[in-house]
Length: 82
Image (cartoon, rainbow, N blue to C red; front, side):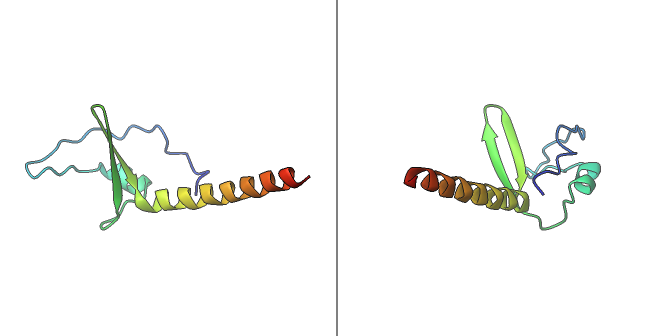
């Protein structure tokens, strides 16, 4: 899940925006990242940049962070009551 970062920083090549505004994700990236037809992506933008993030990965990250936040909040409450 979150600890699986073996693909971070890997360069998969380049792509071109087609006539209908679509892009093709390189085959190796689709295979490595288990991208399949119908997967949902969040599209983020910045100055001269577009980032695609798989929704299922973001959901897992949000759950992970939520559990960590709950743990931290409980620990802070315990410290306050002492």
